[in-house]
Image (cartoon, rainbow, N blue to C red; front, side, top):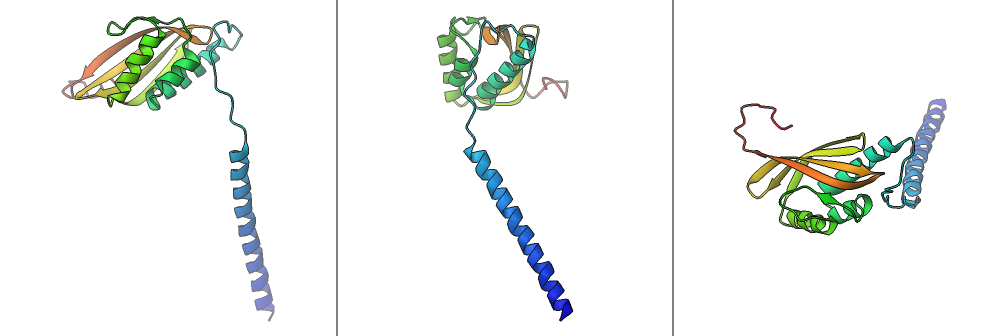
Length: 172
């Protein structure tokens, strides 16, 4: 009888602990779902505080994620590229709106991206990624100049990846 009482006690404790864990997990999930989303980030061309380098890094990280990973050109530009935008790509017209159209059209045509890396420092930022469009694959580097936390100027370099490169670690 003692054994059965002890067994039932242990069983009840185990069931209670399991129920408690389920409730904790559900409560945690409910809290995460109920938390208010952060307002969207928007660049500040006059930002000049001591943490400017960190803020520029965060801008490049968010821009790169939106642009390369999510292919959301409009949101990336709305957050990080103000009205002023000098474009050095020889195949795109000047200005913000021309860049948005050029890049959005590229992604709509089935362009795929991967292997993203990025960094920022001393008023500049860069993203490096792989891009495939049609039957052509490129290694891409976008180079940005900042004013505050806003991207105001852009250069890019593309290298065609043929698959016959002598260097086995070429590009990435």
